[in-house]
Figure 1 (cartoon, rainbow, N blue to C red):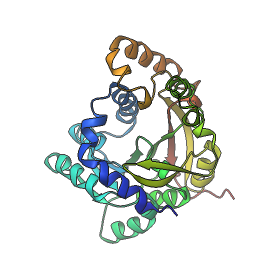
Figure 2 (spheres, rainbow, N blue to C red):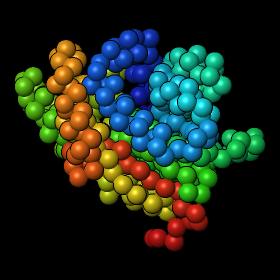
Figure 3 (cartoon, rainbow, N blue to C red):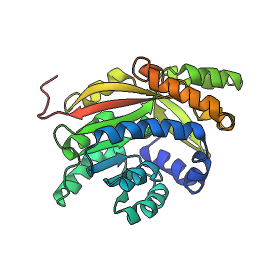
Length: 274
């Protein structure tokens, strides 16, 4: 049986080489830029920001360098150690907390006098390792100011560019993996854990008591997923053209992205929806 700790063990194992591997991939940088542009447009300047599943702290350090006060959380102690080394010089910090345990974290944080956050984000699908998203939503409802934005980037559930990439690589089972419902077995560094390809309806149900879903933005509609690496990084002109297509189609074809950015907004008052 997979547990939150199973995913944390997998990412502990890859933490020492994580930045070296993924940092060199241009497709990852392209998708990261798209998410950062949205955050910089929306988060209030100098705001207090919470990150869920922040890994080694690349995005948190980016925001901290732009004047934000960031608290990164992640279930992997090895990842958090690397993130803390990046964030401490920038006046921000990281700590070990699993998203599944966010409501408990919120109670402890607020009891200790912690201030409410101006926004939250989760990039590159750590919430796909979480089965119970309602626990995440409940915790965030305690931690965010009324009206604060929540940017949650999850795997898309139908990604044509990934299907094409995996078929070209001769991996038809991988091409259709996102069609599966419920828990799906994943493997990283010889560690197995479960992931869930959450649908929009499931996300809305989990968050609707406390949040309104404002929009979806496709991330990686034309830009291929990391399965296309290192080939796509060797073709920067092609990648730049695909990135321009992503900007054009990010809203009308949001559901077809490698990732989908769900923009929620904290209700001013608790919802009465059943």
